[in-house]
Length: 68
Image (tube, rainbow, N blue to C red):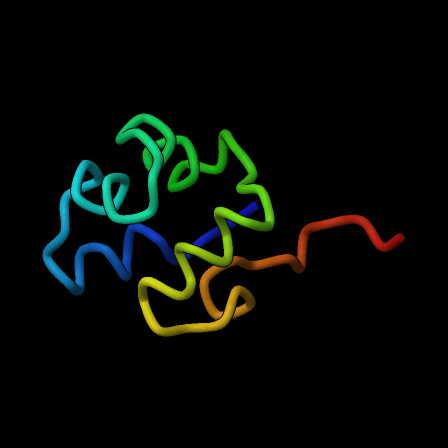
């Protein structure tokens, strides 16, 4: 899954560590989200989107996911 996390984080001059602390995960989790290695839970996606003042859809790109 593609995300805008790295772009948004850099715009606000945040480190991965700082964002992780703000949303309750490790720096490694933020790294994994940014490179698409890990898919955020709904709860984590909400926390990240809320942190940036955006909707989940504005942060996470669901276009490559299979239709249910």
